[in-house]
Each structure stands twice: as C-alpha cells, then as structure tokens.
Length: 333
Image (cartoon, rainbow, N blue to C red):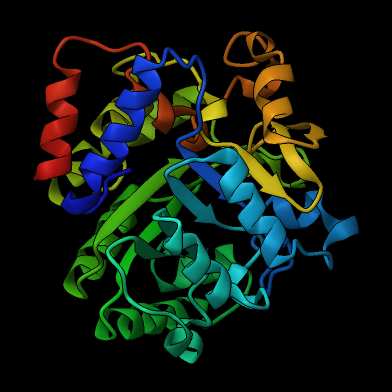
C-alpha cells in the first residue's frame, strides 16, 4: 500500500534491514482483529459467519499490544468485525501509534462522526472506510439501507477534522466497474486520500458462492478497468494491479500479512483457517507454506486477494526489470 512520503522511507528501511539480515520471512502488515462482532451482516463477509460461536469474545487491549510487539510489522490494520465498537478503540490506536507504527482502522464508517473526538490526527493514522459501490448497491451488499450515506458522512467528518482517509472496495461477480469509476470520482471530490481495491475471496462459510469471481473473471474485470486505475489515487500498488489484470504471475506471501484474532494467530492466512497458533513464531515457522498457494491447495485456486499478494509486490517476489522504478514512481506521484 502507498504511504505518506514521510513514512515511505521508514517502511523501505524496515524491508532493507530484514533483507540484509537474510531473514527469509517477515511480516509487512499485521491484521489485528480485536473482535468479530459487527453491526452489519455484509453478504460476502466470512468473518461473522466463521467466528459465530465466539462472536461476543474480545482481545484485551494488552493482548492486542503484545501481538503488535510480538509480530513487529511496521503497519497494523485493525479490522474485525467492526473495530469502532471495540471498547477502548481510541486507546488501542493511540498506543499502537506510540510504537511508531502506521495504523489503518478498517471500518464501515457508521460511527466515525459520533466518535471522531476520541482520536487525534496523525500522518501515521488512516480511517479505512469500506465502500463496495454507490448508494444503492453498497447498501444491498451490506444488507441495510442508509449505510452508504452514513459512511460518506463519516468520511466528511474525518476530513473536516484533519484525518487521513482511504477506502477499501471488494469486487464481486456483479460489481459494475463503471460504477466504481463513478464512486472514485465522487470520493476524489470530497478529498479522500487514496483507494484500495481487491477481488473477494470465496469463503466457504458464505452461502452464496456464485457471487465470487474465478481467476479468469478477476482478470477480465480488472483489465476492463485499466483506464480507471490511471485516473485516481490508488493505494493498491501497480505491480499488484498488473497481477489482477493477468499481465504477470505472482507467488503468494501470506506470511507477509499475518492475522491475530481472539483464537490466536490464524494459520495459514487471513482467508484460510486450518489452525490457530499460540505464537507468531509458531505461525511463521511451523506452517508448511510450500503446501499452500495457486496450484497447490484448491482453496487457493481463485484467490488473488491483497492480503496474499501485496506483500509479494512490496518484497519484489517474481520481480521484473523496471519494477523498482515503477514502485518508486507510484509512491512519489
């Protein structure tokens, strides 16, 4: 993902130090899920269904901070569930920022205006608001009317208060890419700082499997939207976008985006659950990574999600001549 210029060198320095130390695998983004409870029941969400039995449980603030320290990733994405309903979310964010981490608070946006005074603007802190289309289709996707308007109101409140805001969009089979072009034009007009986009993953816990895209479906949709990607400020890297468009192959580096939730360190990845490890070290060193990925595990066949492949782009996995220049240009323009 793209960072403010003041932070780009910090993240780059982290990568260089790990590579100079010949560290084989290391995390880039910690996916921290302090809870799985949510005020919405989004159609394509596997979390609220997979963790239905433990939906009322939460990690303590100290458990969250211990996980941040244990992992050591320079970026922490606080997700869930809806983290804005987590008690002490403002304290958690503040204490992670004290550790000089970049924080993305992933939210449906409905509680931002109500809770905005609990947070302080920082060039290391983003509200990351989930929007899957314009008003009608986004509200259908989240199964409640009025959510789009509430999210946009939250974005406006955050921008008025001086916060950085980006959005995250999941693409499904019925997604109209022309509508997303309209969405990004609108969000640009209200000064959103950048956009993330990725295809949805076919969670087995979701009843309607027809909504998810095959690998070829993904390439077709993202190739057709090439002009859109040149028009707006995407936090999604150009290398990852080329992968989504079928212009290159990439290997998954799921270990680059480890997930910590109420059951432990989710193995092997953010999307597939075979085990919950007691420690980050166990996840990193006891997972048979060679058994997962495209062509190895059938659950990976249609997965092209950023949690598996954006780290690959950042780390230069399957790199081509000119990729370094392309990534630098993207960060600085």
